[in-house]
Picture (cartoon, rainbow, N blue to C red):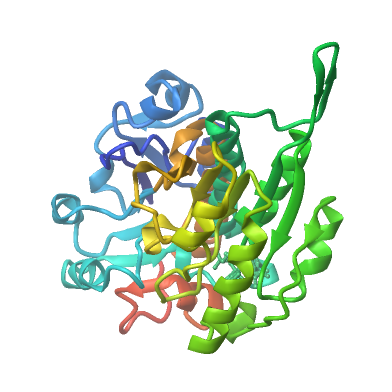
Length: 365
Ligand code: NAD
């Protein structure tokens, strides 16, 4: 079997789905890796580094298994052969038309977002690996935009107090943001509606903001709040936010528009020069004044909503993603390099978003 690694074409997408470090491991499974010319350029990985690792530079669209980062465009779907296995972020919840197009094209598609978040699948969890990068970058962005220091400084010219950073939504991205802001010397506070994250927040040296609203839903994720809870939450957060120089928001509810946690009034109440980094822009944003993908200044507060922060750190985001992809490949292919799609495995069944019909188990060279 061949594995094709394509060059990403989305705007600003600098990641790649497989890196030279992992080619040997994939080849060890009896898989031949074909990399599109220039596919690693965004992550500063030259074609020769892939060749040195045992891959071939060529046409990846002809491969039996195509690995990608971002969802394929219509033009890319047209390049996929019938029966091809596709692995990538495919946005099955947000783009049902794209999934239908893959189904029509006869592609068997595995969406990394749809991998069940069970312990056995942790090493394949691309949502976590990329959220972790985004959480880290969000803090660096906030630090760059802030007109103040993050750490406390005692200098001959006076003492500077540490910046106060609030992270709303303490999932994977939020916890990484708290850890990063702490390392930069900020005074950190985390908030979430899942009560169990309180301990995780505190273990990172942050305070946990208690607002008395708990909302745990399906699969341990947060549920959408009721109208009354939303109002109550916004009211209390608006009051709390006035004390913070930086607010980083990461709150998402699967399949829903992102909750509004930072109202225009809350922004108005922040100190001049404050910064909001909204990581939920793709789902509509957590801040009322967010313009997804843009940076705006309102009430002397900078509000940034970068849409693909993980792509801005392509070396490590690609490396972590490539590990996730390799783990999934090893689940789909047996030790002799033959396809072994076991749809009774909840990971295989869960991740397969197109082309599952009629396929119980298959073998092929
Ligand atoms: P996410 O990106 O979907 O959401 C980010 C955070 O926003 C979550 O912590 C959520 O609770 C919070 N949130 C949602 N609505 C909110 C609101 N109105 N106010 C405040 N906060 C709100 O979450 P994620 O980071 O992808 O993961 C979180 C969940 O996934 C947890 O249940 C976690 O334990 C689980 N998880 C499991 C594994 C695993 O076992 N393999 C790995 C990673 C995450």
